[in-house]
Image (cartoon, rainbow, N blue to C red; front, side, top):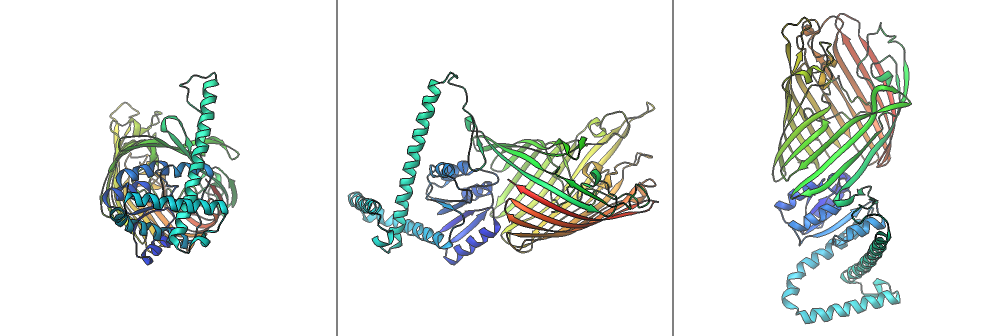
Length: 578
């Protein structure tokens, strides 16, 4: 058989793929519903084995779309978050089997063997068996199964033939589906009676119902899927650092200033994040969705135990089969990767660049077999500078917006995703003249490269590099974009690299470092001339949703015509994710 596996867990996917090959089945693997639909449009599959919880498309929407393209394909669903309500919803979609993780690989083999035999015999039965004989045979099998159920006879006593055993399982599932349908009918009748006798208007929307998968079903086909992470950090620095009183680190002040020799500890839960994904009704073949996400690192009016909300993401998106439009606030498309650190700042101003800002973004991609080519472009503005002191952000004061672009190539490799990208941006800032003379326009630009390369199924390399000018709005140049004495742009170069090792579901290890190195000739005396960091961490997962991590990092900041600063940081983090 030709099987499409849709599974987000790479370890479990590898186990399935190896088993399929051993059983002489061909298989392909997708980690998202979008990718799976693209494969289904291009190739024919006998069986779709899919996890119900996917990051981009809910199973309730994906299964009908699969059936539109390939109604002959059998669908088997899997879940590790079982409930009666979830099972009822999925079974209504006309699947073959509903499986609860973890399950034995031997059970999966029996199911595949049964489906394979059924597919092979379908043509023969359609030619050799008359409708009358088929009807009589089905009546006989049904009577036998009902007799076995009433008399409580073990299935092994009927026959040792695996086909009979699987037919009995299907009969039991059919009974379960009929019971579910009856329960649903009763519920609808009760709901109708309640609605007719209430004082509310008939067209008033019903209250939302939360499903076991965590999604909220809203009227008119809308759905919300909340998510988030509760994160608690404890850290120790052997020197004073810059970064919200030690909650995180972005650079280190000079040794002889700001009591830099003073060690300090920090306790915070401000990196706790809450968000929701929004799924609207589709428009034709276009998927409409959105996202809102916050954390508590807004520095304005914040104290450690009375933090204020900060908007991270707030955008809507139109997704077509080969293009998308995003409008709202989200991450910059240049240098899209991030080091896997426990530190909230993830190497900002020390080699990792790119932040979040309001933007209009357009993406177009082409797929050839397993190869994906993508072009992205967005319009936005500089954020965060007021060099002239007139109270207006100099980027927003400019007449033209900034334009960002990225070209990338990706394909599966070692059962993961391999990707290479080049990106860049260009924009302007306007510095108003204090004396009433001519305003000064300064440019901002960058050229960037990124790589994500799975060396094996447990070892991964990723990193980025950049060459830029006036890059502080994107967390480059160690926060220095324009020389305040000359109004000249500051040029900088840098990047970061990391190795990640995931030997099992329980453990994850990461080590790497980064550097941001502005050109000394562009800096004033006392400015930050170089900032670097190295880190190593280990995370243990009690479960997929509960983990604890420990990280050791070293930070060093050099200054022009001033003493340098360095810091050794130890950080412990506890995370509960939903």
